[in-house]
Length: 299
Image (cartoon, rainbow, N blue to C red; front, side):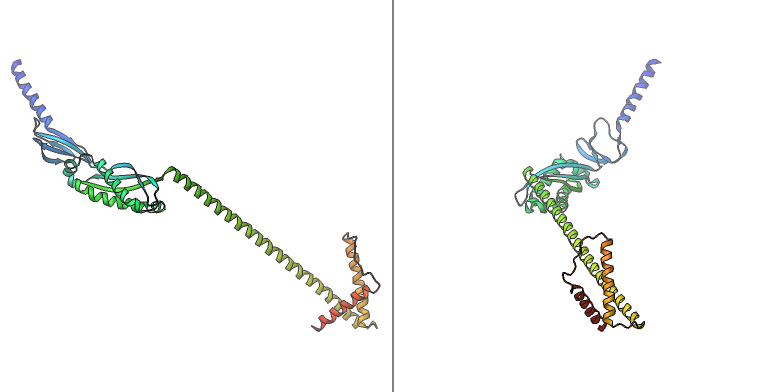
C-alpha cells in the first residue's frame, strides 16, 4: 500500500513542479521578452503567463517601460574660446511598440544617449559666445533633444525631455564675470545715489525759491496794507475838516508810523537801529513815501 502511495505522490509532485515552472509573472510597467531555443518568440505584457518547460521557452530579458533619467557632464568650448562644463539631464523610455529593437539592437542605451548628446552639444555650442550660450541654453537643449530623439528612434527609445541644468565657465572666467558683475552693481548703486542726491538738491532749491517768493509776497502785502491804512486815515481826516492839507496830515501819520516802528523794534529786543544821520533824513523818508502814495493812487 505504501509503495502504491509513493508511486502516486511522486508523479503528482513532479507534474505540479513542472506546472509551477511553466508559470511566470510580468510586473506592471514592464514587459518580458520570451525566446524559444534561443530565438525570439514573443513579448509578454504585465500579468501571469505560461511557457514551455525544460528550458524550451526562456525569459531573455525584462524591459522597464517606466521613465528613465540620465545625467551627464559635457565639456566644450564657446565661440569666444571659453571652456564650459555643461550638466545635461535627459529623460527617456522604451517605445512599447518597438521593444524588440530596444533589446536586440542596443546593449547600453545610456552610453549611446550620452554619446549623441556630447556630439550635438560640441557641434552647436562653438557657434555661440558665452553670453549667447546663457541666453539660449533652453533653445540649445530643445535642439539637442530633437537630434538625439531622431537617432534613438532607430533603437526603439523615445527621448521625452532634455534639459541643460547648469552652465559653468572655467574658474578664471567665472571669477572675472563675478568681478564684472560686482563692478556693474556698484556703478548702478552710485548712479542711483547720485540721482537721489540730485533730487534732494533740486527739491531743496525749489523749496528755497518758493520760500523767497512767499516772503516777497508777504512783504508786498504788508507794504500795501500800510499804504492802504495811510490812505484811509488821510481820507477820514479830510472828511472831518481838520483844516490841514494832505501833506500835513501825511507828515503827522508818518511820524506816528515811525514812532510805532521804533516801539516795535524795541519790544522785540532789538538794540541797534540805523537812523538818518542828518535832521533832514526823516523829511527825505516822508517825501519818498508821499511820492509812492501818489503813484499808487494814480494806478
